[in-house]
Amino acid sequence: MEQPPESQNELFALRRAKLDAIRALGIDPFGGRFDPSGSVAEIRARFAEGNHERAAGRLTAHRDMGRSHFLDLNDGTARIQLFVSTKELTPEQVELFKLLDLADFIGIEGECFITKTGEPSLRVKNIILLSKALRPLPSSWYGLADVEQRYRQRYIDLLVNENSRAVFLQRIRIVREIRDFLHARGFLEVETPMMQTIAGGAAAQPFKTHHNALGLDLYLRIAPELYLKRLLVGGFTKIFELNRNFRNEGISRRHNPEFTMLEAYWAFADFELMADLVEELICHLAQTIRGTLLIEHKDAEGNIIRTIDLTRPWRRAPYRDLVREAAGQDWFDIAPEARRARAKELGVEIAPAFADFEVTQHVFEKLVEEKSFNPLFVTHCPAELVRSPAKTRRTRPPSMCTSSSSTARKSPPATRN
Image 1 (tube, rainbow, N blue to C red):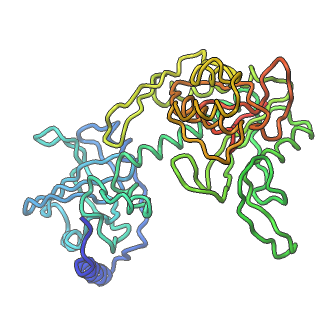
Image 2: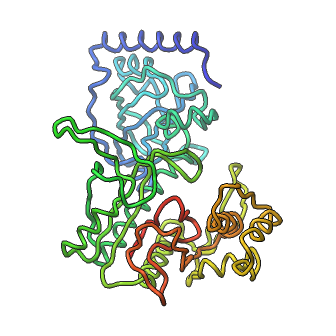
Image 3: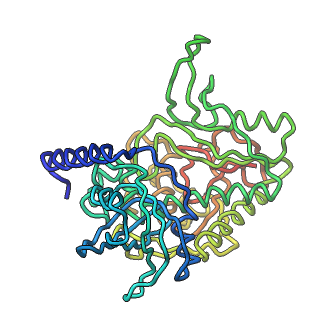
C-alpha cells in the first residue's frame, strides 16, 4: 500500500533529521567513494569462509536482534546477508549505524561466514556511508503492486521487482546477441539520421519538429529505410541498424510512439536467404538466452497459455493460400459482396467503407495473423499492401512480405533484402 501523504512527510522529516546528525558526525552523507572487491554476485560465487571481502550496495532489509543485527545488502546483481554486532564496531561506527535506514547505500568490509541456518553472510568489520536515502522504499521490498505506478515510475519498479529487472537484463542480452550475430556474418552496423526532411520508408503519421538554425521543418523518422538504401548505393553491401523510430499514432499492445527496430539489408541476396537469416537469428537468440526453442507464452498470472515452437524450418506460405485455408478455398473466386457476407459468417466485422482488398486483409488479420503462433513467413503479399517494394518478382515472393507477427498494412518488416 502507498504511504499516506502525512506518513510520507513524517518519514522524510525523520530522514532529514538523521541526515543532519550524520553531518554533525563529520561524515559526508553523499560523497562516499568505495572500491568493492567485486559485485555481490561475484562475492557469492567465490564465497569461502574466512575470506575478507569488500561489498557495496543498498540496504533492503533489517532484522534487529538487540546487539546483533542481520541486514540484506543488494547491489542489483544479487543479495547477501550482513551480520553486524555493535560490540565489534567502534563508537563512531555504532553512531553511524544507528542513523542508517533501508534504501541507504553503504560499503562494508567483512569476513565470510556461514550462519547456523546455512546462509552465506558477511561479518561486518567496517561501515562506510556512500549515500543517504531521503525517500523510503515502497512498502514491500517484494513487489510494487500498483500497476500504474510501475509504469509511470519505472525506476521504482526496477528497484523492487526482480521480475521487471530480469526482463530488462534479458532485453539487454538480446540486443547484444543480435549485434554479435550479425557482426559475425559480415554485417556492418550503421547509424542514420533520426531527423529527416521526408517522413518516408513506411506508412505512418510522423512527429514534426523544427530546426531553428536552418529554418527547416523536419520529421522524426518513422523508419530508417531511405538512408539505409543510400548506403547500399554507396557500396555497403551488408548493413544493419538497431534504431529508434517514432510514429505519432495510437498506443496499444502492438503500437508504441517510440520503439526499437532492427532493419538489415543484404545486397546480392534474395528472399530465401533473408528468411534463412531471420530463422537462424531468432533460433540463436532463443537457444542462447532461453536455452530452448520451445517458448512458453504465459498470462499475467504466470499460467502457460501455449508453447511456441521455433524449430526450423519455419513455414513459408503465400498470402492467398493462407486466406483460402481460413476463409474457404473459393474465397478469391466469389463476388466481393459474397466475401463480405462470408466474413460476417466467420465472425469478422467489416466496415462499410472497406475496399475489397481491405475485406480480405481484415479476414487475414483476424483468422490467420491472430491465430498463428508458431513462426510463419507470409509471402506473395497483395500489391495494395506493399509499400515501396525493393523488387518486383513473378516467380519469387516480394521482399516486403512479412511474418505472422507483423501488420503489413501498418508498417514494413524489420528486415529487408
